[in-house]
Length: 136
Image (cartoon, rainbow, N blue to C red; front, side, top):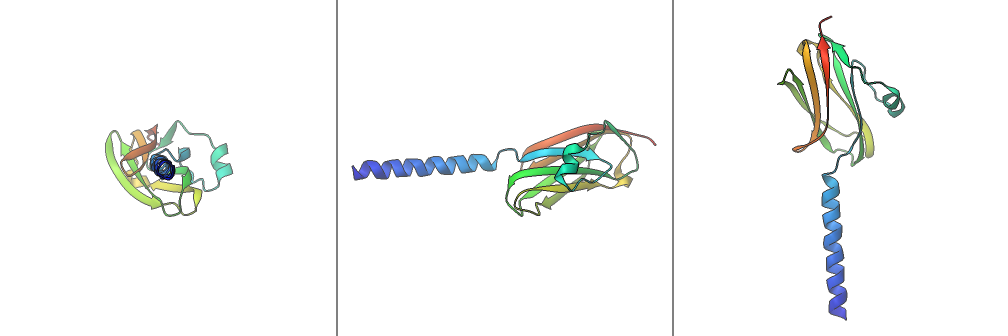
């Protein structure tokens, strides 16, 4: 009887560890807007509309709302224009469990074409967004 109880405890422990490990790789992005505005408040981010196009030469911001993330979790942003990588940056979540990180792309790197933004954790792409960049 004691052997069965130990076996069940061990099996339950292994199952719990497997669930925790699986949860760490799950998508933690709950909102994403790529725009010429920074959104640092959740209510503003939720009410914002995603523009279909932005202008070349202006700063662009990706406001990303994360959930189920511990404080200090590192996320990497990658910006592409016409398929060419123009910037990679890593930021830490400033709050515990949920919060917004604003990634930025400087205007001198923003040229006409197709802009793609990706946010990832380790090698797992959590979210991406594409939009057009037009000349002013």
